Image (cartoon, rainbow, N blue to C red; front, side):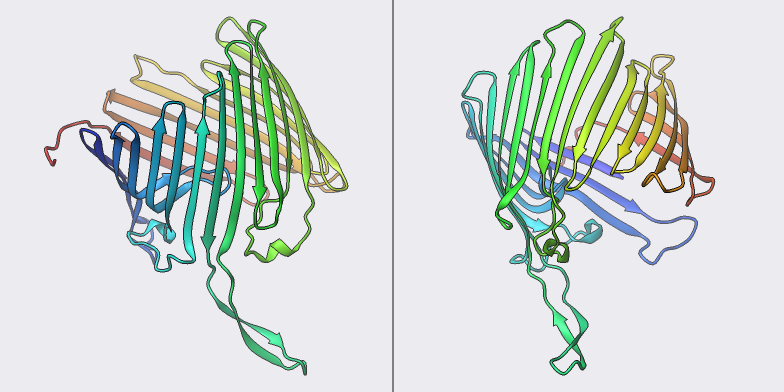
Length: 376
């Protein structure tokens, strides 16, 4: 794996590459070369524009995170920002090639944001993602009920959304975030969510969250013809910090489905060295009790950092079902003899009804360097 950036003034060539092969047993695809990122970036051009061209990351709440092959342009002026992007979807396995069908295999979008109102940020965005599935033949019956082969051709329209979001911050008092997503394909509200936090009382935080959402289904999927119903969720929580290094928290949530509901309870403690948490689910979403513990402690000025994680879960899909138990353990350490060089070793153990005594061992070497290669 290689993360290499070459910089010259306002310009950078950024790359994130991976070469992999199975050492124990040769696979059909061995070896495989993946190009996660490879793009040219120009920053603050003419004191207003930043542009990226090539294979680059995208973070979007509708289409999810990932990469695309194309161009991203940001324009900033005073308290305003206008962003736009267009490109092809990345081929499977991050192959070093571009899509062969730019008409049906692309992502297009943009966002306008402003902070002209004090302590407030407002955003309006649009996204249009297309990905045409492969055509295939299927057996169908003709008018005389005789079987025949029919070519099934799907359209490329997956997601087309318009969104609005608002954020408000009053330092050391409270914050509020709201978002609305409208599905232009189905012509309906896809999601509305609002979250708030009050923290004017020293060391005490109060959280409140609500959302309404429809299932997010691709428009060109067969599942789009079904009526899944919407859900509504409301959650409230408290957290309290003491001794400047411990925070205890508790949350309760209720989720309302079309014909039923479920509840969720979460409690735990966070420290500078790790966390301990408990979660319980009740109702329509299934019953679950889960406890998890994770900790890490750095010694000798960061030279040696051991870590340990334990989790135990007991769950069943309904009151009538039998319980299933899951146990997982991870243990390892990070060894950093020099600032630029580190070694990681971690063992992972899993045991449940499907995977009995599954054990895996991971080893990684990291080397960070920052040097002038004098390439440009």
